[in-house]
Length: 145
Image (tube, rainbow, N blue to C red; front, side, top):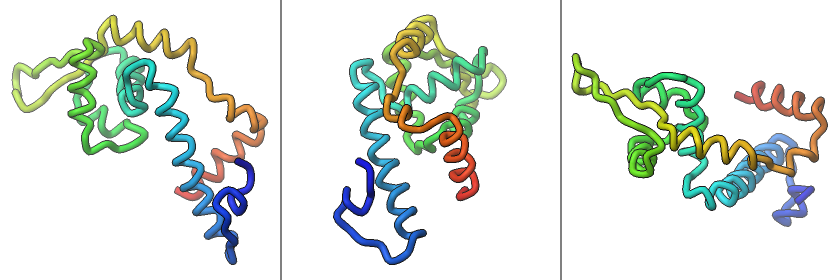
């Protein structure tokens, strides 16, 4: 890892095309690192994101709010929550006034797994950037969006 041209054995005529390919390639590489990290915990990065959202909410919130806050918009968010529910990491609460509305909250087991993950969560590849470089990268990515 280091130079996209060498990593994928390709030349680029345009720096914007090279940057675009580099972003996609790096996003995929990071995703595989995330999957590797979360595998021993029996959850996916998307499920971790759901737990993170619920822990931050500090109270039960609607499913739609969770979907809106997710980093990676998952069309299968309900299925992801089903699996978290099966593991007793989250709990569903039906709205008494409208049965179509479901609230979700994080359970003690969910909080415990998050505490365990928090102790271990570290992606050493991010150490390749200084704090200033990380800030600049965030600014540039925001600018793209």
